[in-house]
Length: 336
Image 1 (tube, rainbow, N blue to C red):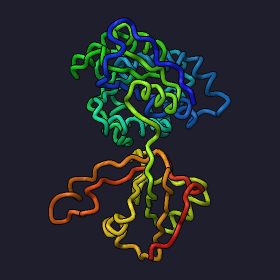
Image 2 (cartoon, rainbow, N blue to C red; image 1 turned 120 degrees about the horizontal axis):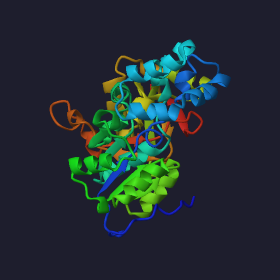
Image 3 (cartoon, helix red, strand yellow; image 1 turned 90 degrees about the horizontal axis):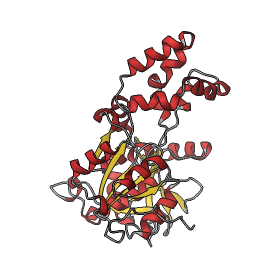
């Protein structure tokens, strides 16, 4: 696809090499849909009306900037005493408002990290709901730091929160790109001298960052890679039409990728993660050469040093930065 050009650069040195990328989180890295929280207590056809009635965007913005939830909820309860369950639903069911990752962004983040680009996040998010959400998504650990508006009592597009981030992490606006799905936030960043990308989807983001020399095409390998799974788990995935796992006992949305292995690494993976499973109950799922996006990342230190080191781990392990599609594999064969 052909992506639109990156947002205009206000003066400065547009050709200066980019050293850092700042990511917004909600709507860019993680999916955010407040309607999903309200759906726990309201019929589908009443949600939009309720959000309009309380002016949800304005109400929520105050919490992003640090207002305590109890104060905001009390304000609404005084105006809408008959809607207590709905008023309290957003905070009580907030985990449903963040249902997973934005498809494709984690691959871009991982590729930037492997290339040594400084990665920082800047999010408008209440401090407590962010703290509760962070452990659900390991992709957030790829950032050198995350500035949360509710913690700082400042929110985008206030220029003060951009200056705080730049100062805290020693970033130069001229060599920094800011990615956000809000045009107003991008405009505020440009006024401070940052280059910006207004996010629409991960494919367009990749094109724009590629134009800046930061990433390439979705990474792929010229060899097959393999994923081990219990037969019963794979059969269930085929029935429901999706495979929600990264590896045994680890959810794809939490890990941010699917664990795979080169052919000579399969036995080590089996011994470490499936030793208690009869090989006849294990399947080797083969992803053909050219599958993308797959990025080879370093193995944990425990696998490359010490008495239990696996010599095949030195090259790193291939990670698939997309859900494993049961219909998109070339071979599924018993391991035993």
